[in-house]
Picture 1 (cartoon, one colour):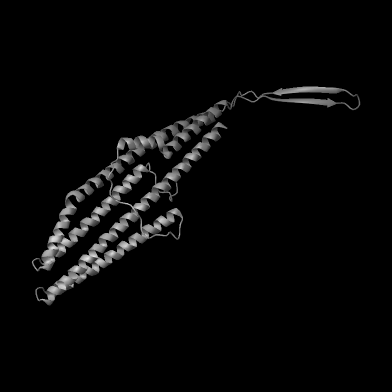
Picture 2: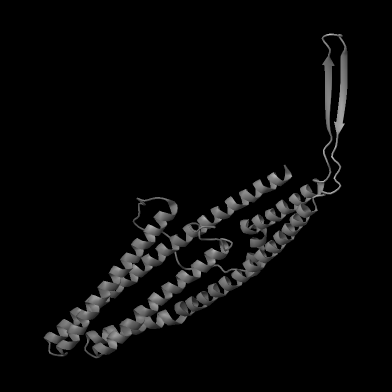
Length: 310
């Protein structure tokens, strides 16, 4: 009974582990949606900016202040921006379908999602590791496996102790009207079979379960260190983007666009600044997505992949 009770607790830990994996996956898909929406916003800006460049170039060509090749290049850039916008829409549709598959909703209603990609809170790696040790269903499952092995060893150790059986009989003779009663008591004597093989095997299984639990804790710490490093790298890049790179890029593209409208800046210079600005914005969004993926993994006790065979 003790062995079976430990197996029940192990199954409950496995259920909690799967639930945590599902919760983490849902949160990951949610932030995939936020990233896709942000890329659509940036792509819309790129399309609007490219369209404005085409209109301005058309006016400059008509005023004979710029060659027609600049207009053709501007039109190519507009077409490229429109393709980028469609790709962002496809990414959003894919993120939505992935979330729908994960939660089992084929007709998931969707217009937009609320939330922000900015992270104002930090993570403490030691506090995160303590939380994993105390609350992780994966570790709890390993320790339940140790308990199963320990109780199985105790069961095998008492196996050589035989059970005492007894039998009481009452016989009645029809011819003599005699009543004969009797009592039989039996107990096997374990001379050759002392269950030593099963005991040795159970002891090895218990040691293996203990080592597996220790290895799981160490492996989780290793994964935590890797995830935390990726989180901090992304966070440092994002801080650099927000404090210096993005403001400088925004000011640059504003001044260059103004100069281009006045015919003071060449289209090639405008094109370089435009591409740089939107590449920086897309890179910032990618780093925001990476930061949230690592943070969610850590907060989810490094459990994900609910649709994978465990």
